[in-house]
Length: 424
Image (cartoon, rainbow, N blue to C red; front, side):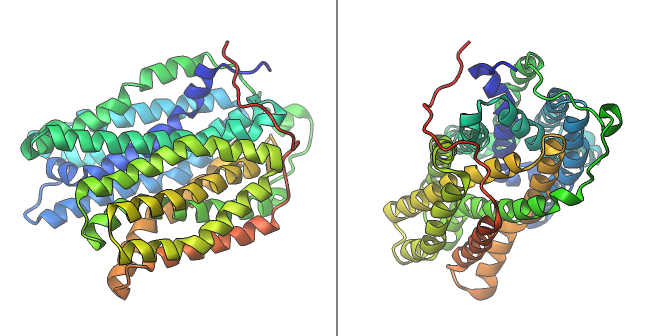
């Protein structure tokens, strides 16, 4: 097929951006959402119900990975991407416009839970078809660069969510923010859904899915790919824990280090900016030097630096140390994470690539992403040690490095390629 244009690349990866934008936006405004849909005499109960509803979305991700991911292998990447993005748009819009408990009673929390389940289903099936599409649309020597844009757009979403959260908190009084201000943050995300759908409809197909019966060939089954999927799941789980611990840095700065909220929000912007700018660098370097070196070198550095970095910011809790440590850890995590996704996608046969990647990614996010911040917060409470997040992250990264050692090199070429996209 012909190469895809820059605007079409944006349409492919925009779903991944919405995933992280929604995640952080809900986390920022969980208290306000609890007030709107889960009123309780005890404010803590309202917040816990709100967070439980957020967590419910993680339960549907593996289901979405199975249904939409396998759809990408059976009928093509484009229909699967259109389905996941349509469901995502409906869920985000429904949550943003949902009447409060005071207006429609018990129907409000029930519908909110349904929208969260729909959104989890959509997001579970998003990564597989889109990453497979990018891999198949890219020139052989630029597969790492193209696929790494999945993580780059996550960074853009994290940065944007942090900036919008700070802006709304500054321009609105607490009453307005609680009444309607939080809805604005969600509506910002829904505004791009129609444009994303319109452009996705114009995408050329990269894979015409056909069943083994249509091709006349026997089905290979899943057993030949179990080792690849298992190693990929370990690496994705490790990267997910590292990423969510980095996202926890905002809460860590305010709750554990007792720093100002505006300073703490700055860590979110830093993490997002580094992901945005350096994920493509990690992918491009993996095209030039191979996937394994560009996975292992940054993550070995992260393994060695995470505990000293947390020790420094705990011992000297100033904005300078907080921002510097966050930047260094995020740099290592970003450079190493992009080649992981590229390596796993490349290692999977094209006939099962969308489904296997979607299911593996969804399970890693659901099990380890959905629990990471809860585990980190619990470890701090139980041990009384502010370095608990660092030790948890270090252990996860170490296991991920061991899985990297066991993987094979998948890069088809290791020659330098210019950083450019098709513009027509």
